[in-house]
Image 1 (cartoon, one colour):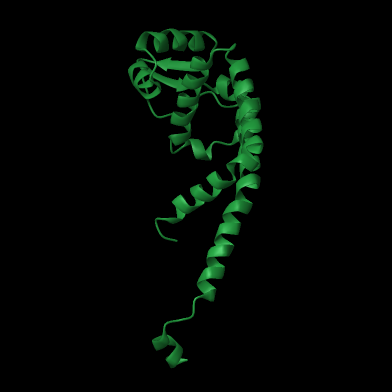
Image 2: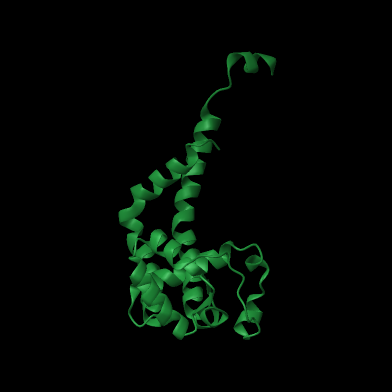
Length: 175
C-alpha cells in the first residue's frame, strides 16, 4: 500500500457517509451522554478527563495494566505521563483559570490526582468510568463493523483492477 491508500480509504468512507452516518453517530452520542453524566453535565470536565485518560494510555506501563485489577479496585495509582494545568489549557483551548477550577472539582471528586503541578487520571476515575470505557469499546466495534466492508470493497476493487491489467510485454514474453 502506498501513501495514497489512507486518503482513498477516507474518500471511500466519506462517499458512503450519508448511508452510514446514523450507524456512526448513535454510538458516539451514547458515549458522550454517559461521559457527560459522569461529569454532572459539564463537557469541559469531560474533555479534561479525556486528555488525562490519553496521557495515562500513552504511558508505557499502562498497556500492561490488568484491567481486571482495576475493576476489582486493586490499582492504587494509574501510570500516566505528566501534564499540568497550563498544558491542559493549551491542548484543549480552555482558559487556564477554567481548567484550574474544573481540575479542582475533579480532584475533589477523586477522579483526578495532583502530585505537585502534575495531574493524572485516578484509579477511582478508571473504576467510575467503566460504563464509558465499555461504550468506547462498543463504539470501536460498531465503527469497525460499519467501515470494514467499505474498506474491503475498496481493496477488492483495487485488486480486481490490478489483476485485470496485463503484465508488461517484456514479462509476458518471459513466461
